[in-house]
Length: 132
Length: 111
Image 1 (spheres, rainbow over the protein chains, first blue to last red):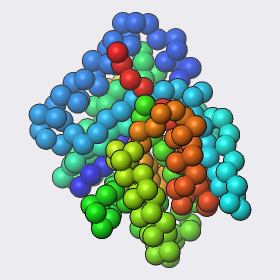
Image 2: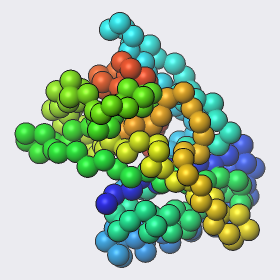
Image 3: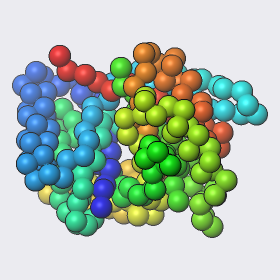
Image 4: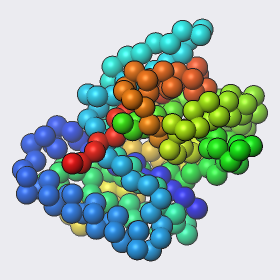
């Protein structure tokens, strides 16, 4: 089953991190990605730009409203994600614990979310849905 | 450029099951943007979520999402778009944008 790992970190702490601390976190991500790739369970992993670059889109009565920033103000911010194919939630949690969450030991966390496997469209195209 | 579209909706809308009326809309979105969509999935509800923290080498696992928010992340879509405005226009076509919102986050690329 595929699991999405949402990596949350404190951006303000990341900005204070030294190049050495940054390199350590980067190396941690490389290690997780190499190991999960070797085991054939890495499906995706991407870092995100800071939430200052986020845009939130709402559609009300057919009108599109675009605002700057993320949809919710939170203490920690979404900084990236992994998608790993794990046997069960326990294995997913084990991998989540290995994913570095921020620079210089900044407080962060990883949220583990099971992915809902939806059928593909008629042409095999991805069909996204909120959830089923 | 790649963008992650995060679909945030009040999951109470699905408390008694998935609305089959959403499916054709999501399929149309998938077909219209087939070449731009690089990935996407729906997520199980936040009642099935675990949050993992590592403090002083110890793993702390708690039930539920990392923060209580008005809307909940219900799915995502990874798209290729020339710029953020184009990605936002795509986000506006996602069904969830009508019931909640879609957050557009540029993917960081390392040179």
